[in-house]
Amino acid sequence: MQDEKNESNREPASQDNEPIEPVMVAVDSDFEDKLLQTEAKLVELQDAFLRAKADAENIRRRAQEDISKAHKFAIESFAESMIPVKDSLEMALKIETVSVEALKEGTEVTLRQLANAFEKNRLLEINPAKGDKLDPAKHQAVSMVPADQEANTVVDVLQKGYTIADRLLRPALVTVAQAK
Image (cartoon, rainbow, N blue to C red):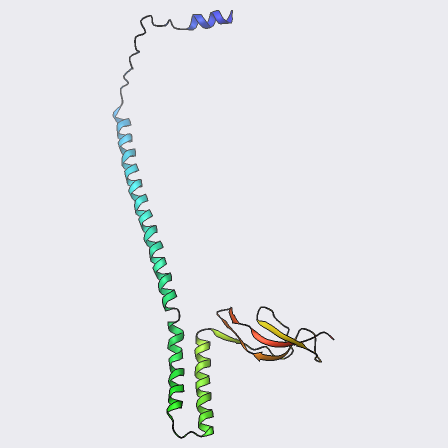
């Protein structure tokens, strides 16, 4: 019974199998205006996207150039501060008659210049005091010796260590107290 109702609601099939002609719908001018506005906005957004993409590429390229220059000239400041130290050492070697006092004084001046150059370029000494706790991040224990102090504390510094901008260049070589 249901099938009969469905069949009666159907339109009769075309006997000729002729194509169905499309129905022409009148497009109002308001719709055409909106379509043109949308197309113009699309072109504008595509242009803005391409400009933003080009800007991002230029920024990336400039950043790479800046990094390259920074690597190339990173040592420039350090080199500038080391030149006076070299000059002082060369002047000391030119002196023909040297007294022990003059040699000592010149060496102290040169050492101060070197210390200033290190400080200016954030090259800092690691020189732990006797009794300081061993810090494996900054100290390298060369040996353990019997001592009258707490275990794993610095007994003696054999060689100073250095950091540059909080990065370890060389650990301080130390002897440490062994457990009692």
